[in-house]
Structure formats: C-alpha cells, structure tokens
Amino acid sequence: MRRTEREPSSYGQGRKRIWWYVRSVSAAFGFGIVQANDWQAQRSAASGKSSAPSPLDELCALASEASGIVFEPFVASSYAELMASIDDGAVGLAWLPPVPTIELENRRAASVLAIPARNGQTLYHAAFIVRRGGPKTLAELRTRRAAWVERDSAAGYLVPRMHLAAQGFDVLRFFARELFVHSHAAVIDAVVAGEADVGATFCNCDPTTGKVLRSAWQDEAGQSIRPIEPLVTMGPIPNDALVASSNLPAHARSALTRWLLALDDRSRAIFEGMLGSGDFRVPAQNHYEMLRHALRAAHARGHDALPPESRMRMRIGR
Image (cartoon, rainbow, N blue to C red; front, side, top):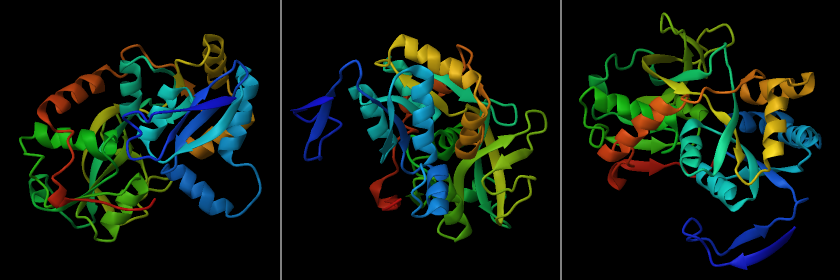
C-alpha cells in the first residue's frame, strides 16, 4: 500500500497533516469502530494487558475469510473521523449509529449491509432518565442540567431534543447547563453522580405496552441496578448498522452480507459479546426514512445545533 501526502481537506483543518492512501487491489481495508464505544471500554477493562487477540482483531480475521478482502482494525476517536476515513477509502467496513449512517447513504459513500435484531427488534428507543425521586415531568426539566452523549447521537441527543421541541419547549434555551460526555454509560454515571439532573440514552421498549425491556441501567432480568428512572421514552429509532464503503468491491459486499445472515458459532458469539446481538437482518428499503425526514426538519429549525458556549461543556478524555 503506497501513500502520498496532500493538502489537508476541510475535515483535517487543525491537524498537522493527513495521509491519503492510494490502494492496490490487494491492499487492506479498515474495519472501523469509534474509540468511545461502551462495549470496547468494557472489553479493554476486562482484558487488561492480555496479549490475546481483541474481539475486533478476531472479527477482522473472520470478515477477511468470508469476503476475500483483507480487513484490519481501525479505531477512530470520533464518528466524524470514522466517516472521513470511509470517504477517503481507508475504511471499508464500519459499525455506525443511525445518524452517521444516514449521512453516508445520502451522499452515496456507503450502504448498510445488515442491522442487528435485539429482543427480535431492529428498532430501539431513546429515554430521558433522572435519578430516582427526581423530576416527574418534562416541564420540571426547565433550567436543569442535562447530560448528552454527543451531537450526532440519535438517542443521546437528537431525538430527545426533537421530542422537547414537539412538546412546545424552546430547546435552545431550555436547559441551564448541557454536558457532553461521549458515551451512554457516561450519561448514566453523570446522572447518578449528580453532575446532571437529566440524561439522554437508549433503551428497548415493548412495542405494545411501552415498558422498558432492556437498558444500560438494568440487568438481564430487567431489574434496575442503578438508582435511575425513565422520565419519558421516544422513538422508535433504527438500530445501529454494519456499513460498507462504496469503495469496497460489490462481490465483497455481497459476501459480507451472506456471512452476517448465516453467522458461524464463533462469529455470532463475538457479535453478541460486543454488540448485544448475533442476529442480523437486511433492513427494509424505507427503514431509515422516518428518521431521515425528522433530521431534515430538525436541521431546518436549528434543533440539531449545539447549545450556546456559555451553557455547554465537553468532558475531556474518553
């Protein structure tokens, strides 16, 4: 694989330099994830300094065997970096939440291979969470402190803000302070620790009763293991997805899809441990349409904007 140096793109402003890769047919593609992934932090803490291959290393080997294309681990510091690496051709396969997925699909830079089903569902929900005994209504959140994941998180920022706006609240002036903490686990920690009065995170709900069935504040039996209560749930939202770059050959995309739909036992176990599901489905053609339209409306009205700097704080370090 040969590399050449070019002037930084608009994405690379502020970096000393960006290396652009010129690929040969046999060159490796990255299998991309974001460093702030909750599952990755948990696995890293559990493995410590073990020399055993990481789950991502194993998945790269399995994806390479299934597709005939060499994949190597690629860990990005943000979804913006991961998306730019897909655009540049460095990453051929990536695990992405719905909002970056929609952005890549809109500009034909990538397409969805498959999405995981959790509890038989390919959709999930967002929730505003509070400490047990905290605010009981959305109106009581006015002038409180909010904890978000990051700006491009559907459940951790965008959908909850759109819900507030739909209820008639001015989302640009609603909270007294807004903290971005980079992961769903960190949102829960911020609420439990009293750093924030309310947080936005994900959950899975029963489609009939609306009861929360699965969340980061519950155990496998659905019992709360943190002093957290859901104030309101919102959705549904399309699940995260395995996304293939348009630079990946068509035969490789087809082979990877077949692999995901008929996983061997080892591949299924790794996906279940990393992502909470080894059951993949091909999404319907309109799977993202409702969220895509909602994002357009949010952007047109400014609801996806960052809060004023005087009320916003980004937690440093991940």
